[in-house]
Length: 193
Picture (cartoon, rainbow, N blue to C red):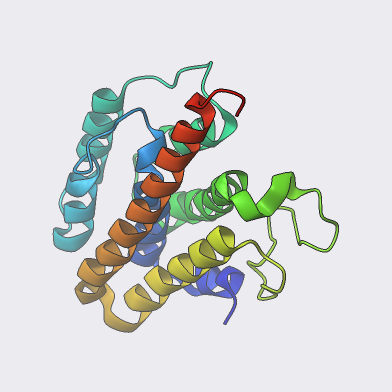
C-alpha cells in the first residue's frame, strides 16, 4: 500500500502519530532542541491526555523560527508551528499529509546523493515516492518513506499499542538525520568546502 493510501485510511491517532513522527525525526534541525521536547505529545497519544497544552509547551520551549535558517530548518519549524491544537481527524489529516511532504523534502535537501535534485531521472515533487514508485529515490528519502509507512502501519495494525514501536522508528530516523546534519555542518566548516 502506498503512503498516500496509508494516510487516507488512517484514523485520528494514526494521523497525529504520523505527523508527530515526521516532526520528531527532524528535531536535529531545530536549533539543538531537546530530544524529549515532543515526549509529552507522544504521551497524549498513548493516554488520551490533553494535546493542546503539550503543543503550546513544545512551541514555547523551542521558540520562534529563525528567519536566517536554511530551508530544511524552516520546514521543520513549520511542522511544529502548524500542528493543530485540536486533535480531531479533520484537523490532523491535512497536517499529517503536509508533515509527510515536508519531511521528505527535508530528507531530499540533506541527502548528499540527491545532488540538488537536478537529475531528471530522479523523481521529484511533493508526491515523489508517496504514491508507491520509489525507483530512483535518493537513499535518505527512500528510508524516510519507509519510516513514514512503518509508523502508519504500526498504528493501523496495533492501535495505541503500536505507539511505542512507532516512537522507536522515529528515534532511529532522528539518529540518522542527526548524523547527516553533523556531517553537513563539519563539511560546511572546512576551508574550501
